[in-house]
Length: 139
Image 1: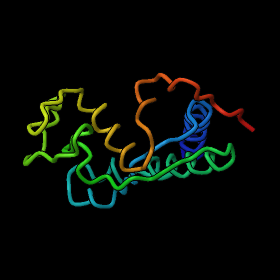
Image 2 (image 1 turned 45 degrees about the horizontal axis):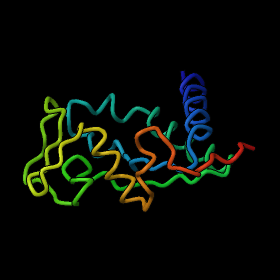
Image 3 (image 1 turned 90 degrees about the vertical axis):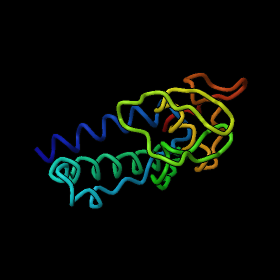
Image 4 (image 1 turned 90 degrees about the horizontal axis):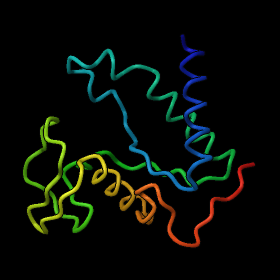
């Protein structure tokens, strides 16, 4: 089972690093969930193995992999940087900023916040490269 997890993690990581030249990922550590009922699933070795595979594959192919602190990524606005006063429930899939009025899907807003925190340009976050940006050839 451990080898299957590693293999799946390496395949996913290779696809990610060949498709993108810079990646921002939450530096997720499942130990903080140990007190909850999700502890058995969240503390699974697959999370750590996949993150490790992504970092190694990024180094191997010369890609920029940046780890971002996961706190408040779903509460911050990617447009203005304002933070909501309450956490969004998982059932709420649309993020609406109370400060600037920006509306976007929750996951896309969170991804843009991570890109900003990593110091990357979120212009290519929609799956479209900025004009003139080419992906370097994989080694």
